Amino acid sequence: MKMKKYIAQTMPEAMKKVKNDLGDDAVVVSSKVIYTKGFLGLFKKKQFEVLAGVDAVEVADTRPDLDVFEKQRDFEEKYALSQQNEAIQKQLNELKKMIKQTSVQQTVNHIPAIIHPIYMHLQKQELNEELITEICDELFDIVRNEPATTYEQLLMHAQESMYKKLSKYPMGGVNFERKFVNILGPTGVGKTTTIAKIAARAVLEKKKKVAFITTDTYRIGAIEQLKTYANLLHAPVEVVYTKEDYERAIKQFSGHDLVLIDTAGRNYKEAKFIADLEELIDTKQNVQNYLVLALTAKQLDMAMIIEQFSTFDIQQVIFTKMDETNTIGSMVNLMVKYNKGLAYYTDGQEVPENIEEGSVSKLVELIFQGVES
Image 1: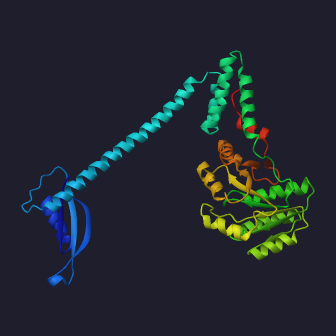
Image 2: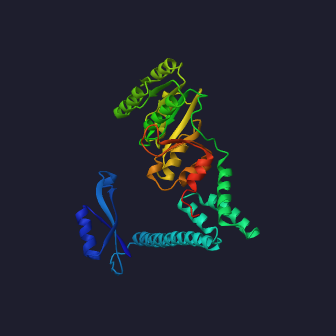
Image 3: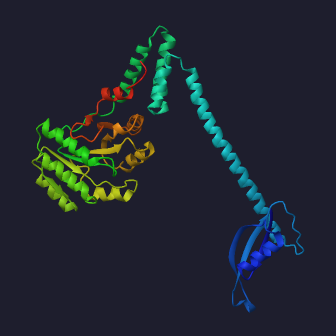
């Protein structure tokens, strides 16, 4: 590209110079306003500087300007380098993609046929590749050392291996050791409905005295929904707007067996909402904190929410909307990555039916559900 700089009193005048000099195929690379000093250094004059160029055109310049040529050469070198870097980056991205695809294919090709259905099922569940590799390596060693091993035996070993890996995480829901339970999480994950399910189980099955507190004053519908559930369960509910309201409600319900606190659903990717929540409610003194996440969300987004709540004492997660997805690998991946247990998972809107307490055996069953047998 042939480059040249033009200076004129007005932009139209500068563009006219570009067109007359370089033709209709010229391209304006940059333009800016400059100021030059007038008589005796006074009275600044406004001018326009335009850097233009044209491809594959030799333009005669009867008034050579070495400074322009130097800048032109630097620009051309930087432009060529940027184009080269862009091409290299594109090739690297394509190469990475090819290597990943090849790696997966090579892994599949090297897996004994008897293990292949298990490997493909775990892949379909979108489990972390490292976890899949660990389990399949164990199966490979069994096949190599005991060639007579049946597929059913390998499948059982894979389930036992998964069971051992998940057994170190706390499982199960409310145990009534702490009467105050905070239900935390972003908007749209089903916190209020989940609270109703937990409360209904406590009242109907455990015969416990339950109360509700809600800080979700941003959505009128959420308050009305919780009040509806509270009326059905003959449980009191308090709406709190301030720290003082919250502390008053806590004292009011001190005689109850279980107090479920419905926190506001916000975009907790923003740290300021986390800070607001910490200022309003007690998350550390004699409380149990559950973080609610929807399995329909992207794993990366759920991971970000968990990290935003890292200052909270959250040992277990509640996963909702299991009935709206075909894979649960993200649940296991997040539990393993962040060392969190499973309190509950929900698979529908019915209260109190569509909720299950987390257990290792049930989770392993869900992971291997539908595997070829």
